[in-house]
Image 1 (cartoon, rainbow, N blue to C red):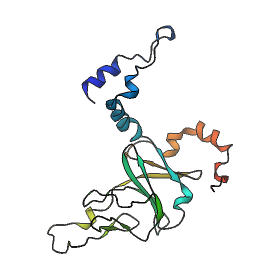
Image 2: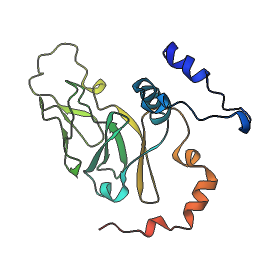
Image 3: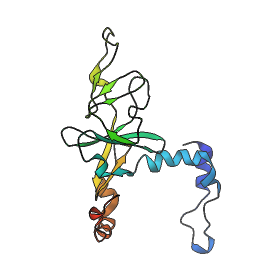
Image 4: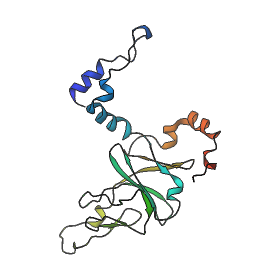
Length: 187
C-alpha cells in the first residue's frame, strides 16, 4: 500500500470514544487510490455476487461478470460442475466470452480463436503447430473460486480465505433461511 494512503488511514481512530469519534474524511470515498486499495483488500478477498444459479443450470450455460475490474466467467461443464475463470484469453488477454450470458459447446476467444473446453483446458490454438516449447496444458483459463447458495452464484478472485458458507457465517445463513430464497422465481 502506498505510504501516503497508509498515512491517511492512520489518522483515523476507529477505537475513539463516541464523544471524540468522527467519520472518515470524504477523501476516503472519492480518492481513486482508496478505491484501488478497496479492490485489493475487500473485493478481491471476499465473495461477490456473480449471477443466478439458474443461469448456469445446463452444461455449456455461462455468465460473465465484472468484479472489481476483473472480468469473470462462470460456466457449467459437461460433468455438471459449475466453474469460474477469469474471462481472459491466455494468448492476447482478450475476453473469451463477449456476451453477458449464453450457451456454448466451447469457450472461444474471438480475437485469435484460441478455444477452451468447458473445464477451462486449452484445446485448440490456430496456427500454433510449429511453435517450439509450447505447453498447451499450462495455458488453460485461470480458475477462480465459485459457489452456489440459495439459487445464487458467487465468485471470489483470491484463492485463499474462507469458503462461502464460512464467509456468510451461521447467523446470516440462519436469517436467510426464513426467506426461502430457493423458492423465488425469476421472470
